[in-house]
Amino acid sequence: MNIPQIRLESTKGQIEMRTIQPKQIIEQKPAELSIEQPKAQLQIETTPGKLTIDQTRAREDVDLKSVFKRTEEFAQQGYNDWLSGLARVAGDGDELMKIENGFNALKSQAKRNSENPIYDFNIGWIPSAGSVKVNYEPAKVNIEAVPQKPRINVKINKPIHEYIPGQTDISLKQIPSLNIDFTNVEPILDKKY
Image (cartoon, rainbow, N blue to C red; front, side, top):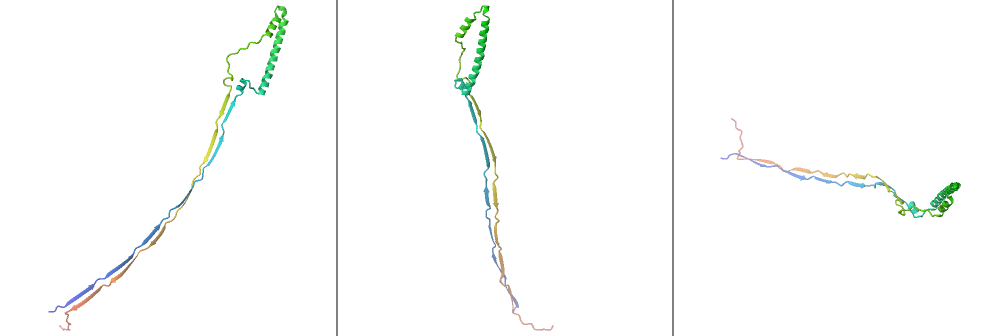
């Protein structure tokens, strides 16, 4: 006996995908930097040191006197000698006025005027201690410095960014199909029931 059969034959559908990968390019240039450092403003004022040595007294001690000093001393010595001579003559005159008192004035005056004077002298230092005067004024230095700030210039470079988006193409590689086949099927007659 022949059994009617239905045969089904199907073909699966297939999808095909083609993908183009995206591309991204990033380039970052370094920043442009310039630094300039101006020199500091420097001002220096110097007052030189001053050394003074006064050896006038030491030179006078060894009899190396200036003309002005000698003139002054001679004038003073002359005045003092004149005063002492005047006093001596006045004293001698007073002694001679009192000769009647039995005082031997002429003899004592002659003796006094004929003898050399006696000078007192002890140890001496030439030149005398402390006769050279030294004075020193140290140098003075005044420093004024004005610092200068550095000049910094920065130019920032933006990144270079390039992007190519990806793409996906989807297509139907194989179309699905369904075939239906009937076997052992007799034609159905119209029957009345």
